[in-house]
Length: 136
Image (tube, rainbow, N blue to C red; front, side, top):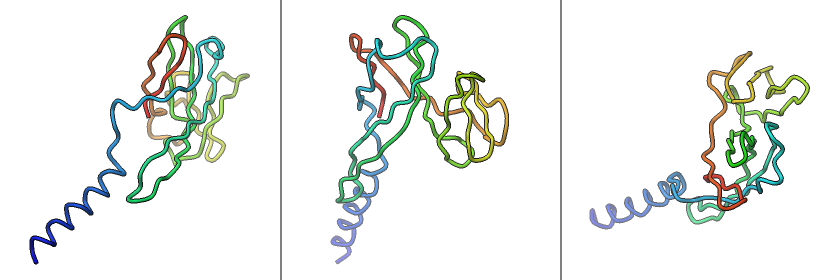
């Protein structure tokens, strides 16, 4: 009986871990270099299918891509680090602003003002020809 409990524990633990462990080699196409204006953050919403236990779930994540050179792109998660609201790019002020509690981030995702405790999370990018890939 103890062996059955141990096996069920391993299976259950595997289901929980499978929903939280991310594959490091999972890259998603986001856009192309030609579609990104120079130095202007561009929002992109990604859809990622993942297993949550035995269910397949579609996660949506908004990121900002910033083309900083002919073949260099940086990406930030659009989620404010204060309480999780989505930030927006204010082109006139040249900052990201959080509408919930007034958080302000510079073009590089660093906190400039307000309650956010940390910068916007960076998202890894790489190029495949002219395609911009982001790490899921």
